[in-house]
Structures are given as structure tokens and as C-alpha cells.
Image 1: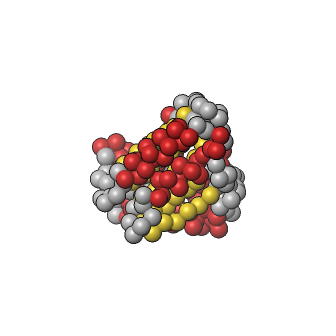
Image 2: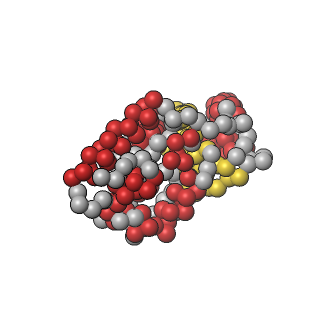
Image 3: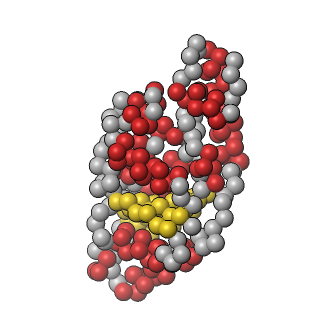
Length: 232
């Protein structure tokens, strides 16, 4: 199994400990690639639209973004591990997701994403994890990923791993490892009804748009090349 891990902080604190506990159950016999944010993508999307109008390789940040995207597409399991900042995902996580916008289903989705599995691991001092998890889960759904599983922790005692009560640390590790074991012997996911519906709507949109233009857009040409829509 190929696994890509994106950790939304460079600090080797609580998120790092949970991520390592998760991977400890999956390292043997699997190929793992890890990225850390913001180190591996220090850029915010500039809104230049070159990825939409031309190609994602035209993005001024392609040298950072493309290796991460290529690893994701090549993986069976995609793991996102990050802390909760003011009830949402950290800005550098959102910055990376923004760079993937051209691969959303209304634009140029990669069919390899239609069988992927995503695991989301988050922690906060006590705030709900749901909103922060939704930031990534929503993006994954629109990229075509059919299976997204989540686990979140409220630390309560503080933000420093070593200062948490030993029993709580042990409980977090135990639950994270059990979560990881659910991904062993992973089989490709099947496209969900939600995913099929989004894809069908987007296909109709691209087909209709093609009728209105003399030259196909980059998105429409991609859909034509995939055989998902028909030329006029």
C-alpha cells in the first residue's frame, strides 16, 4: 500500500505524536511519503488562474505543489494530520488545498482519485474538531475521493504533549493506533452516490459550456480527452 502523509505543522508536538502513533501500525510493508506544512509548500495561491486557464504546471508554485499532488494521486491512502486553529484547519493547510482547485470535479478531476481513501487526524485544546476536519473533507469530496474517515481529540490538559496526563496520552495513542488498524488490508473505495451525482452535474455543465464556445476551454478539452463528453 502506498501512503501519503501531510502534516499541517512542523512542530513535533501533539499532532506529531498522534501521526507517529498512526504510522507505527502501518510502516511495515507499506511505502510512505511524508510532507510537512508550511515547509513543503510555503506559498499561498496568488489567484492568477493559470492552473485553470492553461495547466497546473503553469502555477508559479508548481515546484512545491506538484510533488505533493503527484504523491497523492499515486497513493492508496492519504493522511492529513493537523492541529485545530480557531476551530478551523491551519492557514497553510488551506493554502495547499487552494492549489488543488483545478483538480476539483467541475474542472479537471483525476479519475484515480475516485477510488482513494482519506484519513483525517486532528487535535485541539478543547474546541470542536468538526469544522477543521470539514475544511479538508469537503475538498477531498470535490476532488472525487469517496471514502473519508476522521478522528479528533480534545486535549483539555494543555497544548504540550509531555504536560498531558500520562493516562490521557496513553488513551490518545491507543485510539489512534486502533484507527490506523482499520486501514490495514485496504481495498479501493467505490465512488459514492454523492460523488457520482457531482460528477454527472459537472459533466452536464462541461457539455453545455462546450456548445457555447468556438474553442474548448482547458477544462472542456480535458473532459474531451478523457472521453467524458462529446465534441460538438
